[in-house]
Image (tube, rainbow, N blue to C red; front, side, top):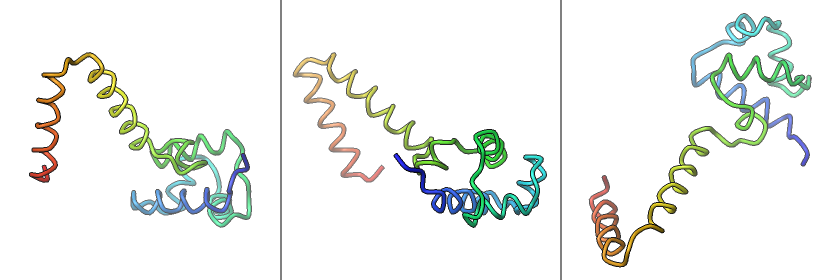
Length: 111
Protein backbone atom coordinates (compact mmCIF):
# COMPACT_ATOMS: atom_id res chain seq x y z
CA UNK A 1 0.00 0.00 0.00
CA UNK A 2 1.31 3.41 -0.94
CA UNK A 3 0.71 6.39 1.35
CA UNK A 4 -0.99 9.36 -0.26
CA UNK A 5 0.94 12.21 1.37
CA UNK A 6 -1.15 14.84 -0.36
CA UNK A 7 -4.30 13.38 1.24
CA UNK A 8 -2.45 13.11 4.57
CA UNK A 9 -1.62 16.82 4.47
CA UNK A 10 -5.21 17.70 3.61
CA UNK A 11 -6.49 15.60 6.51
CA UNK A 12 -4.11 17.33 8.92
CA UNK A 13 -5.25 20.75 7.71
CA UNK A 14 -8.91 19.76 7.82
CA UNK A 15 -8.69 18.38 11.34
CA UNK A 16 -6.68 21.38 12.51
CA UNK A 17 -9.33 23.75 11.11
CA UNK A 18 -12.17 21.76 12.71
CA UNK A 19 -10.46 22.36 16.04
CA UNK A 20 -9.93 26.06 15.18
CA UNK A 21 -6.17 25.66 15.47
CA UNK A 22 -3.60 27.55 13.45
CA UNK A 23 -0.43 26.03 12.08
CA UNK A 24 1.36 28.00 14.80
CA UNK A 25 -0.80 26.29 17.45
CA UNK A 26 0.09 22.84 16.07
CA UNK A 27 3.75 23.81 15.76
CA UNK A 28 3.85 24.93 19.38
CA UNK A 29 2.07 21.79 20.61
CA UNK A 30 4.40 19.50 18.68
CA UNK A 31 7.68 21.36 19.12
CA UNK A 32 7.99 21.60 15.35
CA UNK A 33 8.31 24.72 13.25
CA UNK A 34 5.33 26.41 11.64
CA UNK A 35 7.14 26.04 8.31
CA UNK A 36 7.44 22.27 8.79
CA UNK A 37 3.72 21.92 9.58
CA UNK A 38 2.93 23.98 6.48
CA UNK A 39 5.23 21.85 4.33
CA UNK A 40 3.56 18.65 5.55
CA UNK A 41 0.07 20.03 4.93
CA UNK A 42 1.08 21.14 1.43
CA UNK A 43 2.84 17.88 0.54
CA UNK A 44 6.30 19.45 0.43
CA UNK A 45 7.62 17.33 3.31
CA UNK A 46 7.00 13.75 4.40
CA UNK A 47 6.61 13.47 8.17
CA UNK A 48 8.59 10.92 10.15
CA UNK A 49 6.68 8.49 12.33
CA UNK A 50 7.63 10.52 15.42
CA UNK A 51 6.38 13.71 13.78
CA UNK A 52 3.16 12.02 12.71
CA UNK A 53 2.51 10.85 16.27
CA UNK A 54 3.16 14.35 17.63
CA UNK A 55 0.73 15.83 15.11
CA UNK A 56 -1.89 13.21 15.98
CA UNK A 57 -1.62 14.14 19.64
CA UNK A 58 -1.79 17.87 18.87
CA UNK A 59 -4.92 17.57 16.73
CA UNK A 60 -6.54 14.77 18.74
CA UNK A 61 -6.74 12.17 16.02
CA UNK A 62 -5.24 8.81 15.06
CA UNK A 63 -2.59 7.76 12.58
CA UNK A 64 -5.31 5.65 10.91
CA UNK A 65 -7.23 8.80 10.10
CA UNK A 66 -4.24 10.77 8.83
CA UNK A 67 -2.74 7.92 6.81
CA UNK A 68 -5.86 6.11 5.59
CA UNK A 69 -8.80 8.41 6.21
CA UNK A 70 -10.27 5.98 8.75
CA UNK A 71 -11.52 7.89 11.76
CA UNK A 72 -11.73 6.58 15.29
CA UNK A 73 -15.46 7.17 15.05
CA UNK A 74 -15.66 4.75 12.12
CA UNK A 75 -13.67 2.18 14.07
CA UNK A 76 -15.97 2.57 17.08
CA UNK A 77 -19.04 2.27 14.88
CA UNK A 78 -17.70 -0.91 13.30
CA UNK A 79 -16.90 -2.32 16.76
CA UNK A 80 -20.44 -1.60 17.90
CA UNK A 81 -21.89 -3.31 14.83
CA UNK A 82 -19.76 -6.38 15.51
CA UNK A 83 -20.84 -6.46 19.17
CA UNK A 84 -24.49 -6.32 18.14
CA UNK A 85 -24.01 -9.11 15.61
CA UNK A 86 -22.36 -11.31 18.24
CA UNK A 87 -25.22 -10.68 20.69
CA UNK A 88 -27.80 -11.43 18.01
CA UNK A 89 -26.23 -14.85 17.54
CA UNK A 90 -27.26 -15.66 21.12
CA UNK A 91 -30.95 -14.93 20.49
CA UNK A 92 -33.65 -17.44 19.70
CA UNK A 93 -36.24 -16.92 16.95
CA UNK A 94 -38.73 -15.20 19.26
CA UNK A 95 -36.16 -12.68 20.47
CA UNK A 96 -34.92 -12.04 16.93
CA UNK A 97 -38.45 -11.19 15.79
CA UNK A 98 -38.84 -8.79 18.70
CA UNK A 99 -35.49 -7.16 17.92
CA UNK A 100 -36.44 -6.82 14.25
CA UNK A 101 -39.70 -5.08 15.21
CA UNK A 102 -37.81 -2.75 17.54
CA UNK A 103 -35.25 -1.88 14.85
CA UNK A 104 -38.03 -1.24 12.35
CA UNK A 105 -39.74 1.05 14.84
CA UNK A 106 -36.51 3.01 15.45
CA UNK A 107 -35.89 3.43 11.72
CA UNK A 108 -39.48 4.45 11.03
CA UNK A 109 -39.39 6.99 13.87
CA UNK A 110 -36.04 8.49 12.72
CA UNK A 111 -34.68 8.36 16.24
